[in-house]
Length: 76
Image (cartoon, rainbow, N blue to C red; front, side, top):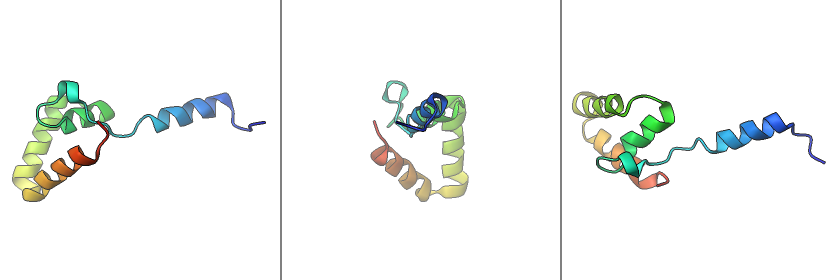
């Protein structure tokens, strides 16, 4: 007999499904930005512009490596 209410079970299922995944259907390079957009609900164009600006003006090569690692490690 389980002590978990049906609402708690539904919430647990929804949280388990919110892991970061790549969105290859809307991808330009690897699907990282479109996957991040789908997860956060922010428009994909804004996410792409933010990633480019952060890489150019703040992160430099670290941003490129982080992007590539996210694309390699994420579920696709």
